[in-house]
Image 1 (cartoon, rainbow, N blue to C red):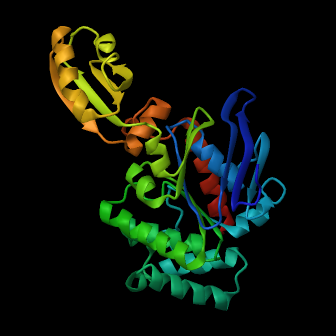
Image 2 (cartoon, rainbow, N blue to C red):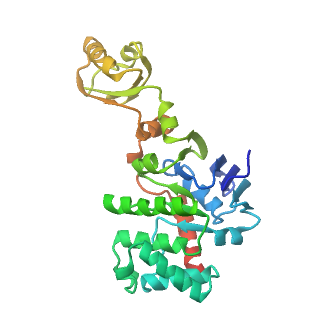
Image 3 (cartoon, rainbow, N blue to C red):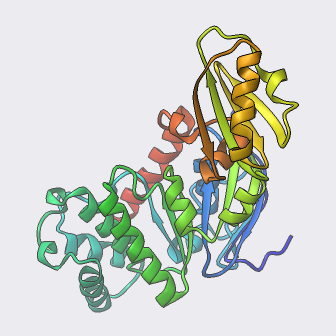
Length: 339
């Protein structure tokens, strides 16, 4: 594998307690200046992978290289060179926005005068000027996210890790946050590695995406490449409760490549949804199943995710116990580092 990217994972493995294989041979290469999305169901290994890349966890085996440094060999130097924004708020609510930035700058070894200058510039860039000298605990959710982005950038990292950065923000707050990230990427060439539960964000903001499931990468490519892999339209046919199984009725129809049954619904991959709908309805009717609903979708990241993991993203129910433990370890480390 190439090891010249801004972020390189090479056969990363993480085993907990000698038996739980949270990450199982993950490999990918993120180019400098790229926005790389990392998606997966809860418990798939996202948080553990990000923690190994950002020097929060040591891998059981394999290599992680970030900014040209092997993470296991140079963890403290890697931490100084990267920016990390957690899904949990790490801004100190009893400090003002300006104080949060100046303290973070000092933690990274930036001189007091330079830290003050950078804080002022970031406050203006993040549209926080009017609130800069208020306690950050009085900030709205969107303001806190912008402050945390500024804190993650105060030492001018070349690589930025974003872990669910817009979780809980309203659409306007999400759009504003990503606007700042896109501007920074264009101005500085910064590499961004992001996990998100919002597939629309991944689709529109990411240059490439990797999907992880059960600790393994199951798909990787640009959003369009991943959608193209579905090979046509997806038609969902819903039949009346208690109707007989229509799988073998639908599978032989012209243009159908696969049929997946989920209760009384059938997810059908086909070359043309428009052509399939009338013959599918007729087939179900002849087979003794009334059709109560039918939906035709062009390929989307939602469909890609369902195809490769067998689960819909909206079924997520929150982080697993392993994810919570890893995230709390990372937050405690970040807070201790700023004291």
